[in-house]
Figure 1 (tube, helix red, strand yellow):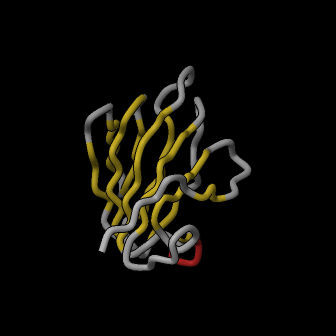
Figure 2: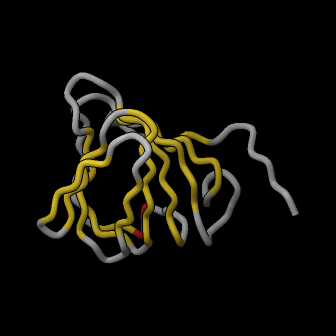
Amino acid sequence: MLRKVEHGTIFPREDGKVIDEHFGVLHTQHDAFSLAHMFAPPAWREAAQVAEFDEVVIVVRGWLAIEADGEQQEVSPGETCLVERGTRVTYSNARQDEECEYWSLCMPAFRPERTRG
């Protein structure tokens, strides 16, 4: 079976970040995984969270900073990074002057109730 997605559904946010979900609970009712196209504005920073899913990020443009369990990584265009479930993580745009564009694959699918502060 094939399932083409022509456009995603935007997760509502108040911090300027755009989450355009192509597959997942919100857009296609998939719970095994979610795939979202992300746009993080300059200087954006998310609160620390612990997720009950594995997350792979693939940076397209800009630089994504990831802080996890005392380690810091800066993921640049063309690079990927895996954050395993149960890891306390903070995501941020590593640049003050440009947007960061990336894709996020979560397994199982992202759901707000699968994260905690």
